[in-house]
Image 1 (tube, rainbow, N blue to C red):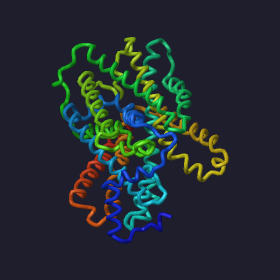
Image 2: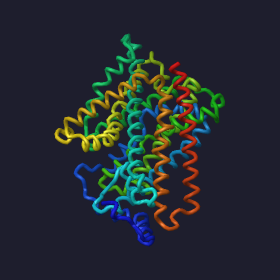
Image 3: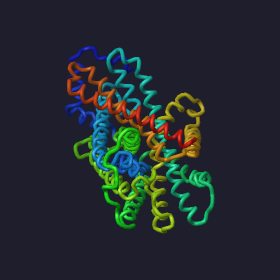
Image 4: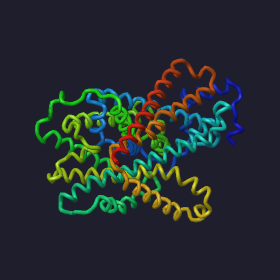
Length: 451
């Protein structure tokens, strides 16, 4: 049906572009039917906060070690601004795609990319299906990596506590113990029902963070700031970039969260869910990373909770609570992955069509087991955080939204001005450099660990 909607007149294209970008958003939102399980602004902010604050928050000390005190403090807000800008480009592309498709109410990330190419310049239309598959692959790999890393984070913290209390079991067995509880909330299929779990995860993470930083401040005088690196370079900067992008891991949730809201227009308004939440997250990242690196220096671990004295009872409690916070964040990351995997499985499998609930539960079980198996062979938490961030998160957060912007603006006469070209090329250049250097350095370090 979409193929019959080709826009052949430049004037019609320009008018549609203006309608979608100059007030058309509110008109579009008013036509969307209120969904039964729509989320509130607070619930959306809670999900976005949890989706962007997980294991990456506790990796900020390692992030600052690789970027330097001043360098990281300056670069993290820049990365955050770039992320928000690209997320807005993604939302804009989704609105334009919906406006050009009669009967459509919203599109998620892969469908947005497909439709933008489908309605884009004629030479690019054949690529629409391939681009959707590429985005789905990156989303699945990213969310799969997040889930595996969550298992590692939980296991490392629990293992330290158990060892200190005389429970001498292997780390693999500790991971196996966490497997069954992880399955229960991951069977929830509606984002609305995950809200209490997400809220609990936020509370546990914030308690773990506040307690960890309190211990850092009260366990003796802080080392002088001059003893730490202000700036770094080369391979360390590459690892910084990967860890930072991993920490801003919420790109895959932007459209699903916005689409699930009762008032979607408030998601990306000036003081809406996106801007307010990202300011809070970035401030939290900078404070956590700065304090952690100053306290533990070059010995800071991939998770700052691992730097706490395991002999101290309070430190053990903090490790347990932080692990619980990350544990309850597993379902929302798993939700995004299943949202991508399930539709094609259901569409192409007769059993899935006949027994949808049974087959979806079976698929969820298989994917949980796969993330568990990958987590078993992860040698270093911080290195895999950098690898996933550099390779997949960068592509999803920067590269794809910029490509969407180029494609949608190419439909409109004079839509690609000098400033748009310059801005997009700068972001693409930074992203590609981050992908190449971050991936290469992470792989080198991982190989070194295996050897």
